[in-house]
Length: 268
Image 1 (spheres, one colour):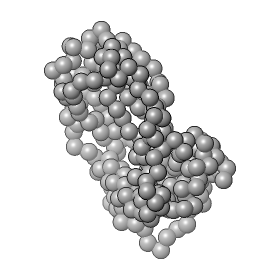
Image 2 (cartoon, one colour):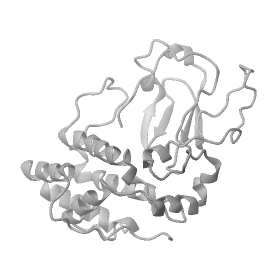
Image 3 (cartoon, one colour):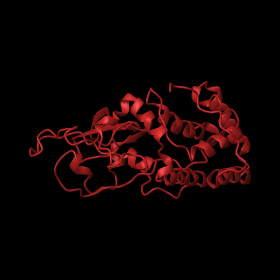
Image 4 (spheres, one colour):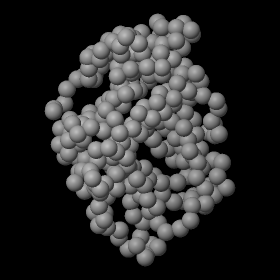
């Protein structure tokens, strides 16, 4: 299977509840023109993955397919990423962007989500529920991940009896075979190792004016640490960011020996 445009997506007799909820929301709030424009603008960019999504109905059909999609890859290893990106590409268009909660590190804890943002979170949850089922991983779909070389599937532990009967989420959170990623200086506190099997995206000095870009959004390190009682302890240090692609090992590890004193989740 080689790279190809997404779709076309069939129109169902009835939409999945989560998709029908979006449809009802758009109609109740008189947002139809705004969403039609968002789909049109996304389509007119010429992005190949929008080839078969040129109307709001097409977008509903895509979402209905996507929420119960059995993930599969192509030889480029980018198909899963493109499917995810297509959903959010429409939602990021100018005419519908203001219906969503802004993501600002300075407003922590974050304000209540807008109706549309809450729907986006719930859509991800609905997808996650399906991806927790054995139906989300088939013999055919599993083979596509072996074909996509950048997934390096042979480097991971295979459960006893194989992957079939397990969920896609279990496959996605697969573990490396012992020794695949040896740790340098495990008993040396001066050695910092990578926290994830990921693509290094840059490093910055830590001061209140340093700006980093996380998922395309500018954040100041001062804002990220604003409500932490340990904020001043990091002054003069270094911040690094790494990016996880869908094909990467999706587990994170402590880069140094120590004890976690504080953690927070920023919705986004």
